[in-house]
Image (cartoon, rainbow, N blue to C red; front, side):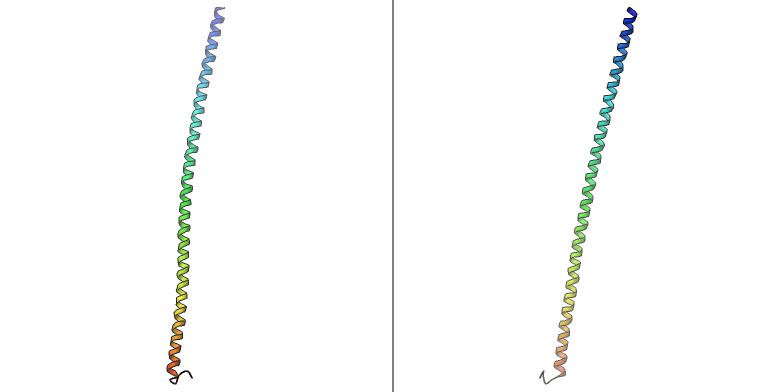
Amino acid sequence: SKISYYYYYYYYYYYYYYYYYYYYYYYYYYYYYYYYYYYYYYYYYYYYYYYYYYYYYYYYYYYYYYYYYYYYYYYYYYYYYYYYYYYYYYYYYYYYYYYYYYSHPEGYN
């Protein structure tokens, strides 16, 4: 009976130690992976957010710059040719008037 008691005590102690050891490492690894996963997720999310807004800002700035560049270029082009043709016809009419006036000293009639 004494041997079976020691055997039972030893078996119980071994089982308890094994269970405690398993539970401790299981909890430790679970906590470690959970923390690692959370940290990785947070890190990934942070950099994704950062680059997303960086490229968004860059795209917005590029689009804004391109839009206003196109806008000013278009209106510069438009007004350039507008005044070009305006002055062209103005001087054409001016020279035609003086040519006709000096070619006919008696006047229009």
